[in-house]
Image 1 (cartoon, rainbow, N blue to C red):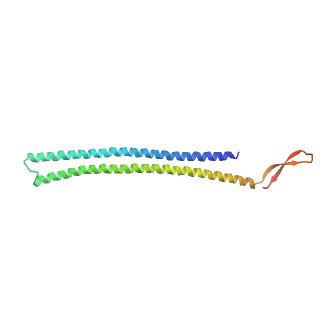
Image 2: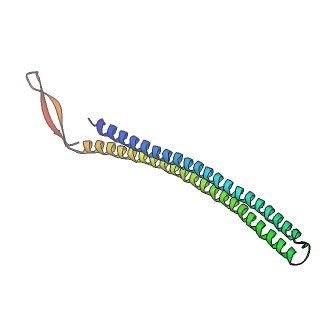
Image 3: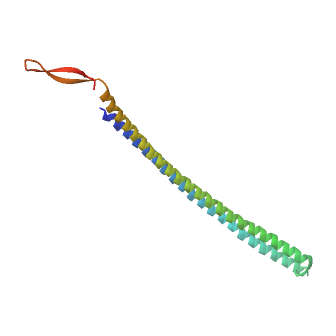
Length: 183
């Protein structure tokens, strides 16, 4: 009957360790999936920013072409004076808008990659933590079992236990005599 508590304790410790390990495994898988989704979202956002950049480059070419045509239609030269300043300022501003879109694309990509990496690291850390927790739980259970086993033996040794001892009477028949042992 003494084995039952040990078996139950071992089963409980093993079940707890397995559950802890499974939680870490699940957290790691979930973090990896979230990282994958973050990369997909980042790629979509970066693609949108790239299309904005390309669109703004087209707007720049069309606007500057329209400006050139309107200026030439009025008989004004773009190579000198205020028409040249207007053309140059327009070109600079439109190119700045396009470059801002390009910078936004780079920032989106960098931030998304960083978030995906952080998610993966968090998942890996959760798995490691759960593994260590499971091992710690098993060690705690083993320690408890050892202390119970050691305590049970020493308590039996040091307590008064009734033992059956054979006693022989003079008639040659064996009778059982209960004796109190102090050892």
